[in-house]
Image 1 (cartoon, helix red, strand yellow):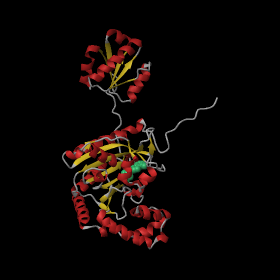
Image 2 (cartoon, protein in one colour):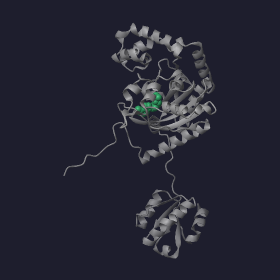
Image 3 (spheres, protein in one colour):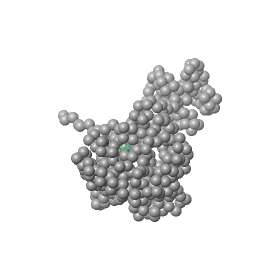
Image 4 (cartoon, protein in one colour):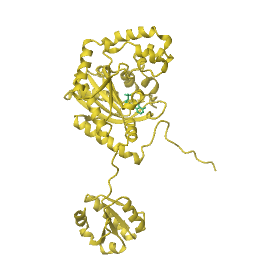
Length: 425
Ligand code: AMP
């Protein structure tokens, strides 16, 4: 007989098993609390969007759209893609539902899976999850600082306290042109010293040469002209104001003139978050973001300045585990319901429900018949009280309350059991 092949999770995807759910519960809870603390409203958008949304928003020449996006045609020949990030979908929803008519700035947050066809490795998956915070409708630098504050707040509450902020300004469409020209001139003088990928980047997306990881390019990168020297007055002022606010918040930052981010929609401030040991391996940022004042208009909406960020859940959980951040597991049940015999088993199902209705946390093992095995489990779960419901008790409509610590037992009528338990718990 041929042995059936065991099907495994698709490459670069993984299962979130019960033992890991405590990390996810904590992340969701802290994200929700942070959103409430800073006035963000929840939004959820579909995992599937029109391909054009990402082509227009993130940019056709970017790695994310060109190499990493899961794009396909449906049976009805619609060209769709699994979202490779959340911002474009949230921006589309903002326009589609006329959210600009709500009081601005409008703060929205979201959490969910993203899909990127990447070479899987530690901290890099094909299906991963992001938490997203976005602010629409204000160009004020105070919001750039506040969104960074939100990320620091969230990460601190999660238990990651030594976060390092890398920040840069990539200017606006006016000043970036001048910079791009200076960068191209410089690289043309140095083409012999750069890798083949950077030669392609110079044609398609010149700023990306700055975050090339190839050893060969590092010398050229270190001497390259820097964007901040080319910023127009408006962008310079915006950058300076943001840094002033960060000083006020006592958030220390590293001015990273090579930080450009891989998405076309950004302008002015861009930033990423690292833990100290990760800084040199820039690909393993915990999160990143920036201002995207042109995106809403580019997608067909009214001119709406915006700023936002995304945090990577898998990398955050990876660091929580590495650093031994404690997450509380399932709380011990107050009561363990033990049953013995058919009648007790049948009546026990209902008794269990009655305990729940009265907000008593309870556990059971209806499929185990041995009292000894059930007591052992009650002990393992650290229940305070065992409720023993045997054949005789089921006939008499009574039950035995046993204090697990002392072993002291008392028989009580079923009609009084809730009152008696509440007295003891
Ligand atoms: P990005 O906007 O591409 O910088 O993504 C924001 C954050 O999402 C990153 O800093 C990572 O923490 C996380 N992230 C992005 N892509 C992946 C991936 N393929 N696997 C795991 N995490 C990712």
